[in-house]
Amino acid sequence: MKVLSMLSSLRILVLGLGDMSWGDAGIGVRLLRSLRGAIHGADLEEAPPDLNFLDISREYDFVILVGAIWFFHEVGRVLVVSPYSIRDLRGSWDICLEKLEMALSEARTFGRRVPRIEIVGVSVRNEVQSGPTLTAEMTAAYGEILSQVRKVVSGLLQEARESGFKSSRRTS
Image (cartoon, rainbow, N blue to C red):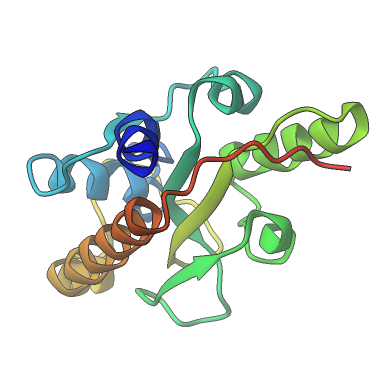
C-alpha cells in the first residue's frame, strides 16, 4: 500500500524548452506540443519566458526537460543528458539551460531540495535562425526525432513509476 501511495503522489513535469520563433532552437516546445495526448501521468508544459527552476523544484519530484542542445555537428541526435554536465552542451542562445545552471548552483549553495532532473536534448546547430520554421534538415528528421523523444520520455516515466522514485534529495 505504501508503494502505491508513493506512485500516486509522484509529481512529474515534462517541460518543453525554447522559443519557436528561433527555428530549430525552439524544438523543445514543438516536440512538447506533439507529445500532448501521447504522454500520460505527467504534466506537460511549455517553459514560460520568466521560468524559475527553483519554483519547479518545490512543485515536482521529477522534471524532464525537452529542448535543443548543441552536440558537435550531429543535428537531430537525441540524447539524455545530466543537468550537471549541460554547460558543454548548451548553445550560446540557450537562456533556459543557463537559468537551470544558475538554479542548481544556488540550490547547492543554500542546500535547497532538487528534484530528479533529466534533459532529453535534441542536437541542433549552435546558431539561431529567425522565424518559426525548422530548417529543412530538422523538418526532414522531425518524425524520427519525435519518435525517439516519445520513447525516451515514456521510458523515463515508466522507470520513475516502477522505482517509486520520490525525491527528497538536497544538494550539498
